[in-house]
Image 1: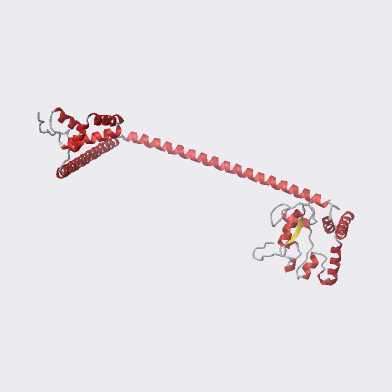
Image 2: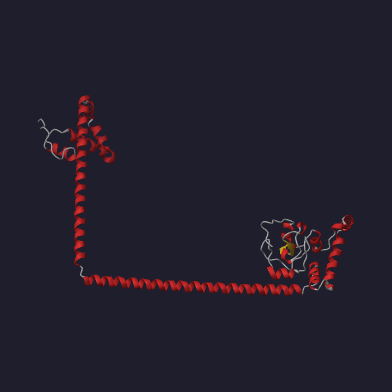
Length: 347
């Protein structure tokens, strides 16, 4: 029995339209045929059982498969069908676009209407508020603002009290540190004043503190050092004698002679004067000096021994006065040498 001509409805171009044609014993329209082919391809890719069924069908009915493959459409028919499918697809896309625009316009209109209704209700509610309610609301806000201001004032006062307590604690701590440092300086001064005969450095300090006359222990320590130096190195003694004979004009007894030789000035001072003025830190590296360190160069700990450093060197016309001297480590004094920068030096 021949199949009927296809009846087109809204189900066409879908798998449901394909089944409707088959149920009504109608010929398949091209959109439904394309929809069925697309459905079969997707099913074949996604469902392994469908792929196995396809292989089994090909084995059981090879003549059908061969007959189906032998059918070849005319190129003009294929082109016409392709153009028809493209036209239908464009039509569907345009229809979807129009529907989407319509839904958007409808939604926008609904939103505008909702907004208008809400604004009207709000305006009506605001207009219906009585003067008594508005006054109560204003009083409530005033009380809230007052409470907030009081809270802020209280927090500000607490922060100020906390800062003041912190400053007092810091000031107390600094005072305690100053007292401790002052106590250390006094202790070191007393210890140094009662230190005699422990090394050659005690001789000069004792002599300056006693109007140019050192005590017997300090003299003995200085003499012992001189004897050990000359006995341990005879060449040094001979070399010093030769140098003194060849350079009588360069022999200086102390810093006073060197300062006066180079055109400087001299005023009496002691190392204790410098300690009282500047403390016990090296002015070059700002670390404490060691009063008990060995002053003999090469002995353990000699680097930290306190030297009297002339800020402006005597060789460059510096004065041997209290204003031009500071305390420095022995190693720092040696490293500085005769360097002097007039632009950056501070006495």
